[in-house]
Length: 445
Image 1 (cartoon, helix red, strand yellow):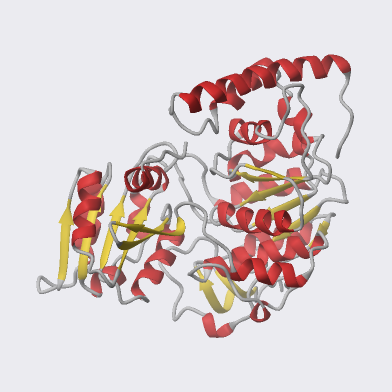
Image 2 (cartoon, rainbow, N blue to C red):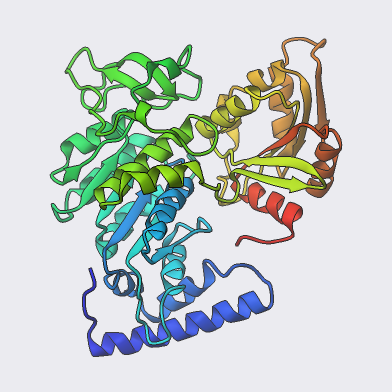
């Protein structure tokens, strides 16, 4: 943290930063996007060690946030808490979480001479590149939020990722603080194996157990011996209170009593995000009053339970990019009295090109309630077919509208939304960016 840089490195760094900032200026001036990836890509070609040279200047250390779901929301909550205490933060707020996006985020707070003057860097990191960036970043705190199946065409199964994480995290300084999800068997086991200081977070509220384990379940087997785990109850997917009847492995004890903390936004998944951020904030010495007040006044990140008003009507965007996340957003929708929902399914690189995951989503619950479902996106007909197969009879009260053109789909969904109700939009990642551009006229990336 805050190490000095050699003179020759400073020259190369300064040149790389100058070029990157020029690219940022051009991209933004021409309104080509937010320049959240390209500057880092170009600067990295000039100085391959750029990530290391920048991160070692962060005064109080790098905070790395990894996991399948919840990275952006958790990062924004922790960032908001620390900023309220007067700390200066570098953060990849647009969600660009590969190497070039991390570098671009750090470059935002860097002078033309290559000096980075921030107290903390809060970086959301794609779960697949964690092993590549841990060594150059040397984070002070590492979040391990959860591991679900997500874009299997790119990543593979969760146990493969967790083994990579364990191997590389164990090589870091013993002063590193690791914050894993106690309710995730794979991550609970990861934390129990590490030599570093480990602070677990999780739920201890049985009243929120699901009635049954959902279809989109990933890891209900013991990560140590492979035996089927016994669950007292599950909160979502495979996250819950578990023990292994064969080897004795069991859920780690969270350091916080979850029932004593309120949560940000809607959905039980945001309780996990809240507890993770609170655990880190307390570790960093933030007072409880500031933390609680920030939670009560928190505003959503773009696309994550984000509320907008369009043409006088309320719109809520709920990012839905994998089975577990989509099941949770469907739960939010079905618990409301609103009857119009727009689903947008894309299969681009940020989404994953394999959309077979939609067959693991409990769309039946969305269809059973009736109302109007508008479907759009690159794979509009795949989504429409999934919904048709969810109908139990031809007498269903569902009004299914298939519209290839996204702007028209949004307009149609708004038309079917009564003045006193909210239009819920459930898009995949690239679709979420498109939806926001249509609704607000602004690009994110």
